[in-house]
Amino acid sequence: MTDALVVIDLQRVFAEPGSAWATPGYADAAAGVRRLLPAFAGRTVLTRFVAPEHPQGAWAPYYREWPDQLRPEDDPIWDLTDDVAGVDAPVVTATTFGKWGDGLARATAGADRLVLTGVSTDCCVLSTALAAADAGREVLVAADACAGLSREDHQRALDAMALYAPLIRVTTTARILLE
Image 1 (cartoon, rainbow, N blue to C red):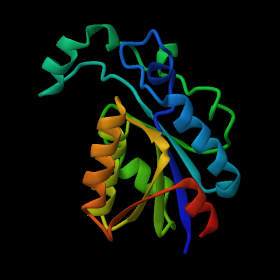
Image 2 (cartoon, rainbow, N blue to C red):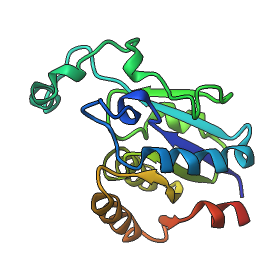
Image 3 (tube, rainbow, N blue to C red):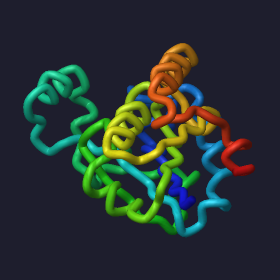
Image 4 (cartoon, rainbow, N blue to C red):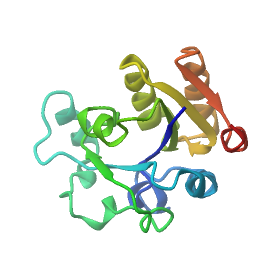
């Protein structure tokens, strides 16, 4: 079985303590990702969230609540953090929480299973996992390589994804490295 590691949104906007979108537990999630990276050399995809230039539909009121995050795609806040910035891997950029779509499907073509990591568990990881599973991809979520907006939100998201077994399986970095 061929696996692909998908590292979701390890970006400054979610890492920096002063950011309105800082994710508690980011450092722990990034440490889990770093443990997995060597085992997935050549089979890793990074994702980036960016704000849309002109929010449409439900995104318009969303960004009225977060106007300080409506920044151009090349703003440094959207940069990948040093945890993954030097990784030789394709980068899929999206203006949506869920990263599953044509770009990620192409970048992971040939992989039977996706190993999801990153932030935040209760938003972008959850959205990506459900859509990828719906598309027929088996999904492993490395719980200790993800972080949510709180420990409780992180756990609730993991519990929700576990309901989708066997399409989605919540596991740990140690178990993934043993498989």
